[in-house]
Length: 297
View 1: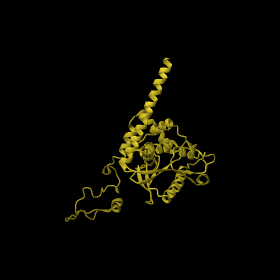
View 2: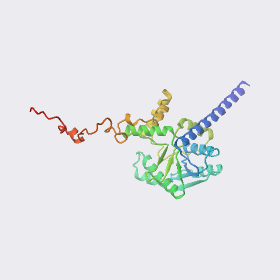
View 3: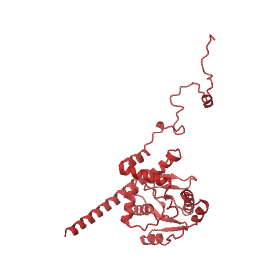
View 4: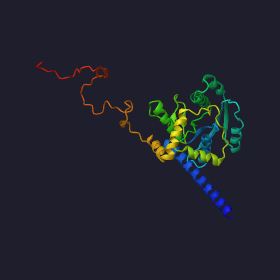
């Protein structure tokens, strides 16, 4: 009897925690959508579905929010079949049809292109993502899509920030909302406030039919994976640090950095009519033409 009671208590606790997790994620997604005005009335939102935990969670939460959203919008799930050998092509159509979600499968053999161009053992992610993005953008343009929703979460945004900081000498990350380079597409990341650990737990609770990416899954030494391990260690040993860093991305003080294009340091404290030596003069150590003249010389 004690064993039965303890099992019942454990089941109730798990069910209670699952409900709390779902509420937390829905709230975070709703907050991100509201903060960045990601979705407007009448939008046609394309949810890019890869078969991984993040994109499944994104679709699931958007479907949940759609029923009670203050605006009307349509969702369509789109997957790119990259023709990877052994890819289970039936999984996503079966799942989406079972849930009654409108969907489309784009078929394009990017796998052969990536494996032909990239030497064995080298990172494939960059080329793979460019080809995938191009195919998705083309379909969006041809089918009246007004928003393209991606499954990047808070930890993806932080990892991108540190990759750019450590290896690109730039302070930038993945914005929650952006306009594509050609100006034709608005890309949104509704999971921007969500932690990866919460998403992983939610995916387990919902029993999503996860499809692993075998194209680059063996590339364990990717810089992004190293950054991910760093963030995970911080979360374990310094709880709250990653959340603080993420909040800092939305609390930028341009005058406290050193970007001359972002803040006009040259004009700061400049006096009207004061002469300025050009950069060449400073670099060459040339004497200033504005230096006072000694009349007794």
